[in-house]
Image (cartoon, rainbow over all chains, first blue to last red; front, side):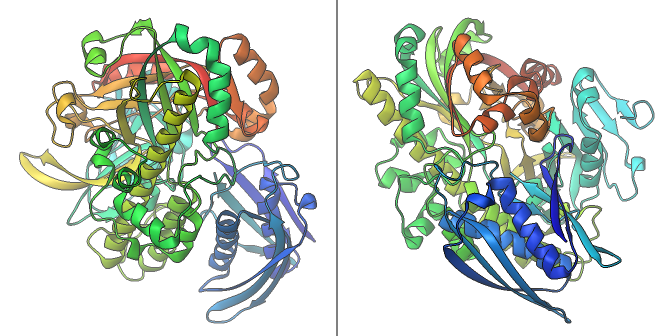
Length: 142
Length: 485
């Protein structure tokens, strides 16, 4: 299970994603896919350009925050949309992750924009585990 | 919303929430609004402004302007003045889009001259001023050149042929705030902003061609002093520091989250209020980096103005000088700045956070262009593309009540998602056309998000500002053309 849901009604605030995964890696992949799905139809994004991200943080939720923030920054820096996400997480005193993402340059004729996401909000941002499933709620800023 | 014991009405337009409302509040929270506006505010505004009131070093009260709505940590419309020596600095109190702001430019053209050409004009503006997601600017810069831009702001534009000398004197801080240090900005932020000079962006950012209608001239003397006359065409635009400002805020938010409690022992009620002591190394670094965001945004709006002048020259076949395309003012509404105020009879240096709030200095204040000093600072209030916008002036009342601050716009009443469900961009574009407003947008869904009913009644917001005495109406502008980001 790797899924996400864009919440519809949040007063006058911005966008919120509820993300679920059956592993931490799955949760991170689903969050990244959900992030890009709010911006574009990722089915139309070809996996032509790859990037590798090595990140660390002192908590898992901070690590997820960094992962998503880093992806937004790459989107802006190189005008890229991503559609393929692979994640490996090493848990420890300081958690580390390796992410491999693939996508292509934004082509407005094939990638009509849905929303511009400029930042991930760090709150509320608590990853919870229920049985074998992981869940988190992520607020996105425009 | 709980009125009565929890929210006390101090006057017709001032509402106060006592520190007893919430554990940790150091000062009261005050909301400037008419009864209609405060009743329409989402409950999160109350929670957020009372959370702000818990921050260390806050002076007098945490304020929310009449267009307040819930935001990131602070409500949009939030004003918080911190004692420079004992207070904190918080990216949430400034906003991620550092120096998001407004610029107003006049022309000597009348509506009769522009109306027949408005379609061609707006189409050209849409083509020449990049708008929408991922838009790239026409100014090609190396990382080192971009560092010069963020250190120098509009001065860089002047050196590079994108500004008239007079533009700088009519921009807040002369378009270049002192103390911006590119060394305090991450490489990521530099790379994110590199291609964004000269772009409007998306969301609620826009460029509008507007008209001064005779019946909307509220203060003729001040309007004349600002170079305005009946039936005149003006250009107003709204944008900020794009991804660059967001990256600066994101970078420092992470730093603040790590040191706030562990190093400085600061406890906050909401992580979105992450902060550091203003005089700490982290606080100083953020202030210097945030100023780079201010300068980037001044330069962004200045290069956009350069493009706008080119478009008018092409359509009207006269030079921008001959068309009288002079700036009225450029003002930020997402900032933190050091200013001096009298507190209990003594002058004190305060760090005034304004997030979705406009500086509104009254007459004779330092920092205002000489020619505007008798009148007060121009305050540019953007409305929805359907309802029009305002030019106000700052007042002595704002200096006394709200640390020289007032509203910044209409304020949303509806989420963007809800707006997309309720309105259709294509239909809205046709309806506006029929009402004499020609709109070009990077996306129909983006257009639907900005439909008039998604915002508060701007007349009510401006009325609240005036009744509270924190700014005064000069002119209301009517849109005839709009480029929506």
